[in-house]
Length: 103
Image 1 (cartoon, helix red, strand yellow):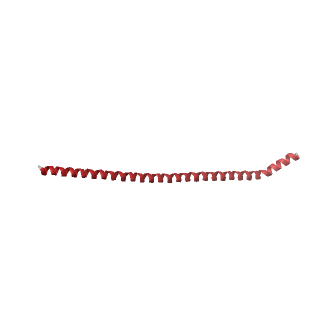
Image 2 (cartoon, rainbow, N blue to C red; image 1 turned 90 degrees about the horizontal axis):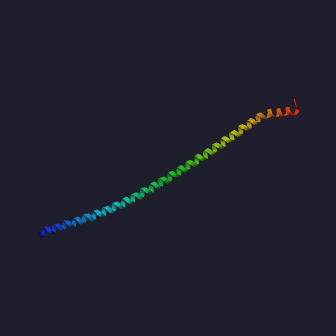
Image 3 (cartoon, rainbow, N blue to C red; image 1 turned 60 degrees about the vertical axis):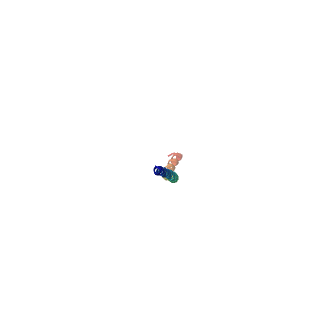
C-alpha cells in the first residue's frame, strides 16, 4: 500500500513538472509570437512608408509633367498667334493705309 501511495505521489510530482513545463513553453511561445507581431508590424509600417513615398513622388512627377505640358502648349499657342499676327500684319497695314488715304 505504501508503494502505491509513493507511486501516486511520484506521478503527481511528475504531472506538476509537466504542467510547469507546459506553462513555461506557453510563455515562450507567447513571447515569440509577440516579437513576430512587432517585427511584422514594423515591416508593414516600413512598406507603407515606402509606398506612400512612391505615390507622393509619382504624384509630384505627374504634377510637374502636367505643368510642363501646359507651359509647352501655351508657348506653342503663343508662337502660332505671333506667326498668324505676322502673316496678317501686311493685310492690316494695307487696310489701314487704304482707310487713311481714302482709296
